[in-house]
Length: 284
Image 1: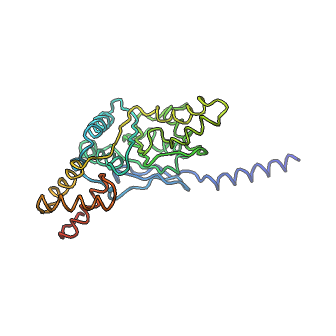
Image 2: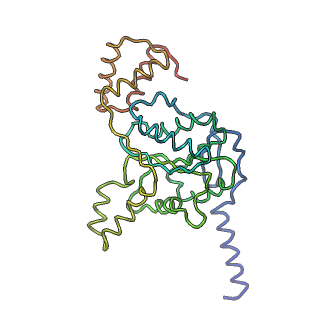
Image 3: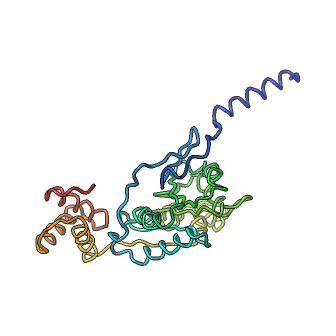
């Protein structure tokens, strides 16, 4: 191939790469909002006008996890060392609600504490997201909800590089919080399959499950009992002014969870939403 042909080919490749990966936009005005969502194509941080969250005081039955995450985040907001956190366990027990509630509880005292949400499918771009945040005067909780990986999913490598620090290291003004239904971020049968099929089973499993070890805090969330379930609903009634007798509340709440076949914070909130609607009480 001639030099001219090579130059033309390189130019076309460069143009194609620019179309595939548009240049990042300018860093947003972080004073415009307390939370942002990371998007790609093109890379950008979009402000969230109103965060969907509940007050920290309404999260019942997760006291240890609440206090631990609140203390860790408060230290981080003050510029002190803090750990990345993995919130794992039963569905509907308030993992994502806790992250948003802790941020809400601290943002008034620490106005420069921002919440950044990144979708699991965008984890390959997490390094570019950190480039937006690195060097900014604000402090950021980078949050990924419902984190999990399949056997052929390479996204965990992008996240692993961030947790390990890589060459540049995780920015001092960023901490990562993730929620997952799985303690090791992978289904147990997939871990067992790795053990049975890999040439070096222990190494294959170690690579897959070691990602969770890179979170300094592991906060477990377990299914709630009936007393906790009822306490959650009673707390919602008190907070929003829904008046109902204790006997009727108990009977209706137990019937509701029986029809759902489960008890959790999410089920408690769904029952209370129905109850508030029947009593003409707005929740907004």
